[in-house]
Image 1 (cartoon, one colour):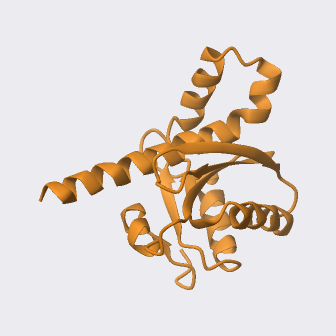
Image 2: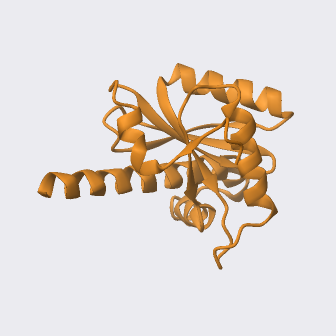
Length: 166
């Protein structure tokens, strides 16, 4: 990773967002769309947002940063598509490159989150909600982003509970 663009650990996000009142966001980078999810201000629930159609990086980044500003986001988590054996393939490298390039355009803290099976879980949830195949295609990346974000939020809440028990 480019040393000029630090990627923070997810567990450091609450301290970096200490101003309070800010939301946390997550994205799932698909081939054709960027799925976006934003938390509530209490950092408890992930809410999917409309997908961003992918074009060129500069257009993608501008649309994403506009969305994040509108939702008053204080940090961004990017799903890292790790292989089931823990190795990183071309998709993970593409996600890391996206983070590196995005980090040059924003001061938001950026974190990576292992997103293994998030798209599978999102697909199952949409099927259970009886969403048609055609509509699922347009929602899958934002649903996956919501699964990624909810995983991060649950982790942060568990860490907060563990710290308050000490």
